[in-house]
Image 1 (cartoon, rainbow, N blue to C red):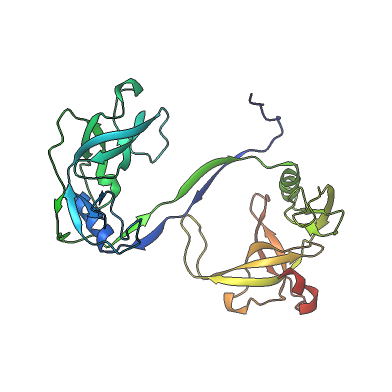
Image 2 (image 1 turned 135 degrees about the vertical axis):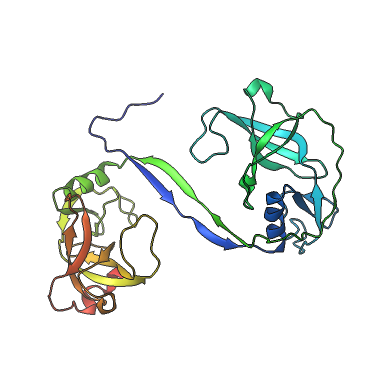
Length: 319
């Protein structure tokens, strides 16, 4: 049974996204370049099995694998699951089946989407074939999806030297998580206080440490925290790093400084960006204060207060 959230419960859609670039070894480079050329390559393991997708090391013996073989573009569904509500970025915009397909000549199965009118049209053991994407660039998305196929298995794995013109040598792999966040009691109070240009933490009744942001419980003592304590607004830079790579969708010029800041009265440091000072002049012990965002909902960054630097002994336990 689901319970509807209370009217004053805070909810927000959040996205965690981290696209990263990786280089490819000879096996993965040949596999992805082959997809661009409508050719599916596997690799032969030490026990003679043909592994698709190919791997660079034998999963049983850990021996390096380099013998590439070409397999068929048709295969057999080994298992499947129906996806009634495709999410953004998935292979098909309409309902489809996730399928594991053992391609002709392969001994392992490849995961991809099957374009089918409904779950009643899908079954383990059915024959399918690759529907190639109209435009291919050397990625798993060069396989647009699988589609039903009534042909028999006729292709056996055959040797392939893995040589193609203009081989793919690297890819950008996108990692993304979309979710809805609902803060608990402690985080809700913290966010409401930020909207009033205040920073509020909670004190542990056992060790007396003030947690900012509050967590609702002390991770050290394992007891609930309920006493709210206003901290800051000023604080001390404890440690910091200089950021030289511009983040996607972040309108901040590099280099800039991201720091751990121990707000006055807090028992641990939170992180924030340092502005109003050249990046190469930021230092441990620098006294800072918040500069609030235009809508006043959170500190946009922290700037120097002009006070003398804090003595190391006053923040050494908060590094």
